[in-house]
Length: 299
Image 1 (cartoon, rainbow, N blue to C red):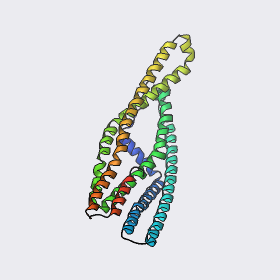
Image 2 (cartoon, helix red, strand yellow):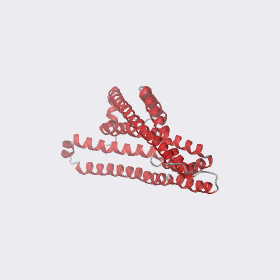
Image 3 (tube, one colour):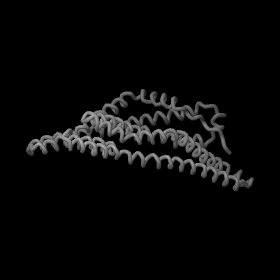
Image 4 (cartoon, helix red, strand yellow):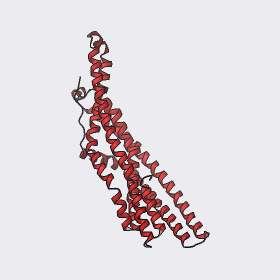
C-alpha cells in the first residue's frame, strides 16, 4: 500500500539549513577554511621549486644551489602534509558534531509532527529518512564536504599559480577544463530529480517490507501472499531502475571528467614546449605549470 511521503526541501531551504548548521560551529568551520588555504598555499611551492632547480641546472649552477632548493622543497612538503592532516582532522570533527545535530533535530521534528502526518508518511519513509538520508548527510559533512572544500581551494590556487607563471598557459589550462563544465551542467540538471526518485523508491521498499513483516499473520490468514510478493517485486524493480539511472549518470560524468583533466596538462606541455623552443619561456616554468595542472588530477 502506497502512503504519502514527508515533504522534500527545495534548494533554497537546503542552503539556509547548511548556513544555519555552519553558524552553530563557526569557529571549527573557519579553522577548516584557514588550514585548507594554508595547506594549498604551501603546496604551491613544490612545483615552483622544482622548476627553479631545472633552470638552475640548465644555467650551470653547482650542487650547492640544488641542495639548497631541495631542502626548502622538503620543508614545504612536510609543512603541507601537517597542515592537510590537521585540516582533515578539524573537518571530520566538525562533520561529526554537525551530524549529531542533524540526528537530534530529525528526532525532535518527527516527534513534534501530528500523529496523522506520521501515519500517512508510513514506517518506510521515516526509516529511510532516519537511516539512509541521515547517513548521506553525515557522509557529506564528514567526508565529501571537507574533500570538496580542500579540492576547491587547491583548484583556485593552482590555476592562479599557472596564470602567474604565464597568462597564456593559464588560458590553455582553463580551455582544457571546459568539457568538465559542460558535463557537470548536464549532470547537475538531472542529479536532483534522479536522487529524489531513488530515495522515494528506497522508502517504498522499506514501507512494503515493514508492512509485510508487521502484518504477516493477516497476510497469511487472508491468503495475500501472492499480492504482497508482487508488490515487493514491483517496488524492487522500481528501485533497481532508479539506481541504474543514477549509475548511468555517473558512468557518463566520471569518464568525461577524468579524461578532461588530462587535456590541460597536454595543452600546457604543447604550448609551453613551443614557447620554450622559441626562447620565450624557460623549461622550469613549463614543468612547473604542467605539475600545477597535474595536481588537479591528484590534488
